[in-house]
Length: 271
Ligand code: SF4
Image 1 (tube, rainbow, N blue to C red):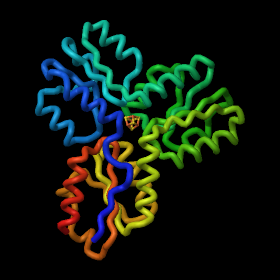
Image 2 (image 1 turned 180 degrees about the vertical axis):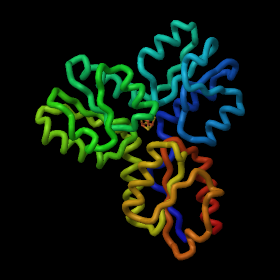
Image 3 (image 1 turned 135 degrees about the vertical axis):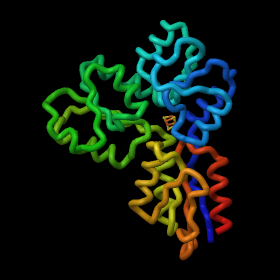
């Protein structure tokens, strides 16, 4: 059996930078707002080392507040500073870029449409800076949109093909629609290389948190091409998946550590 890892997979530079930063700081009185990354194993490891995770800034009254790679809206940073908290901002520069673009469009009078997941921290952060944004995960959700001056952006980890399709459909209705492709380069490279590999194997194993948006997207792309299993760790692998297969492909989301990928590949090789 031959096991191949996608050329681009696992930790992206934004997640790696955020993790390096938090591992560097002393753990006394350190609170991370929301999920630092969507990976349960890494979150567990940090919790064991003393880092605390909170969902709302109101839960923190002293110490250091770490902003995750997904970012937050400006008012959260202002509030943290007013509370006297030390703020360590690990927002990925590519997420910051989306904040800058959308704030500028908002100031120029555009109603910003965000293609993304309403419940995702990144989307909430972008939305929080804007006057009246529209958040959509599918074109069907904007069929009833009234005439107006619109601009379209994307959550950084969305599906590239779906974003292109939505922008083309929207342009048919709003000829002067401004489109900013804000899907990040790491996401694009991971999706492209997963798609390439899925076309060459009989089974794809996609590794990453079940709550990781970019991992779910990789699994969806692969499922459209070949039999695909989404797992979080090696002990979920089942012997029967591999019984009649010779070529196996492996990929992993941007928040999956190299150590987890290695354990999965080692275990497949033993099957
Ligand atoms: S997925 Fe992209 S935007 Fe998100 S942290 Fe990684 S590099 Fe940054």
